[in-house]
Image (tube, rainbow, N blue to C red):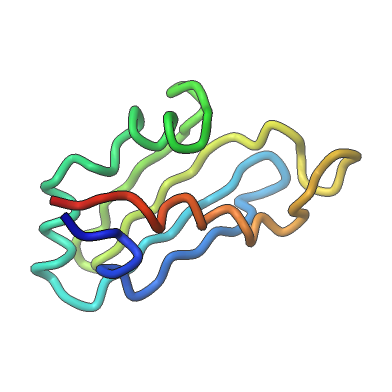
Length: 103
């Protein structure tokens, strides 16, 4: 088992409009990308558990083979910039991805 942070070249998050967050996972190597994709470790269920969301709050998980990347989008509980929002740009939300274990 290897942590996702040790396999990915880039782990980042950002706003996808004021009501959604997008998580990007990018790889340098096609074999590593295939390993992560085929592992099943990145799914609506696993991301919902990791981020304490309902599966319905995850709007997309897209595997981009040609770009060696995975894009995950989920609904924000609080819209960007409103009272109670602790991350206006959505730039601090990727950290939980780091510890996902990939067989």
